[in-house]
Length: 203
Image (cartoon, rainbow, N blue to C red; front, side, top):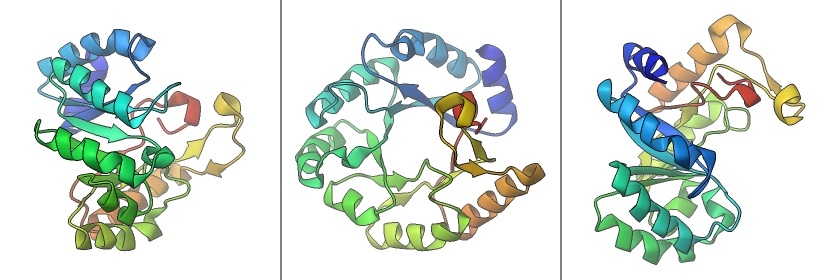
């Protein structure tokens, strides 16, 4: 883990978002190790809260309180709109008083604004390619949301997850083009899918 953090630091990445599947999950049990290794390299740790069984808006609020105990203040909610924006708004209003930043994974910034999120990210580099990002960040900024589009080197998950969709790497050209698109879109931060998502071929 430390060697991975060293690589992340040496690449100039200043924050990692660790996949988290709820209290007691293997990811939860390893989080202390991840935070300690990241801290030694002055890399911040955010939590990528996944759609674990029984997840609800209320459970996510409790998760944020728990994860703040690890020194985490930035949260990315994958599939945020499994729940209505009207359910998120009062919960996020309360969380903002705790100095946390919460991003919604969505291609629709209007939903995130209605839910009182701080920003948006895409994660899915197949559905949301480089050509989508200028409009995406423009819409987010018009709604006073931070725009954190996701870039990635490619996607091939047939063996890992049975998904037949493929986004070819094209010997690095796919990754370069997505970075150029994110920069041109005026992204506030760029999220990378992913450092080590071997199951989806985005590593």
